[in-house]
Image (cartoon, rainbow, N blue to C red; front, side, top):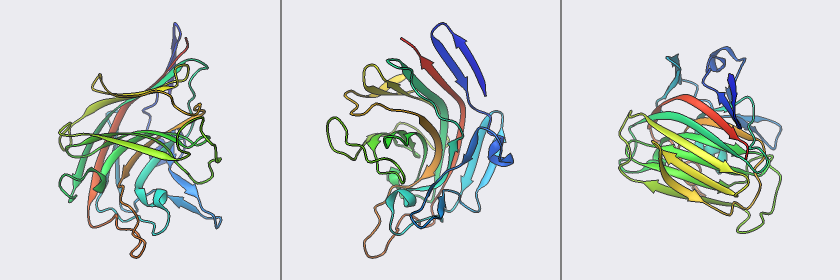
Length: 254
């Protein structure tokens, strides 16, 4: 991890992925504690992991991890969390930037939520999630406040206690195509913005809570409602190949 301070910016380079293999450093396997004292880990047992030229590449084909009762545990199949957290300066902003490529194998054509590659900015003090989901053709921005396991039950200043807003951008990419993504949280303006390849694609004002320490996540996921009778329906032989790199976090003080 390299940190560079310039004027009123702090720039953090965060693309050292070696710890995903060695177990010591900037990334760790993602997961959540369970009510019974266990731990649910988002790791596909047969995933192939390659670190090369500053990029992390993971192939998880097919998806096998699933949970029959808890939606948040069923969604992510293979994921990593940053080992440190990042906060916006008071009245300032923080931007998470990176390159992502996605290839979905044996997925349902035209259905982004059958399988995708993600970047997730997660605040486990409030439950806020700011994400990009990347599929073979479609990209989605995601803005939500979710009941993550262990997160305090905070009532927001406005709007519903829990929500998730998915907005799709059709024909935005192609299988294996690399794009640049930015997610910015402006603490002073209570606003989040999403950029793809330098172009503003989404902006939300009136964020109902102040975000605290944020964890960066890199994932391979699906988003299919658990069936009340059958349980999980998120795995049917599909899988994903994800590629992430050039990760930079910029904290700006106003």
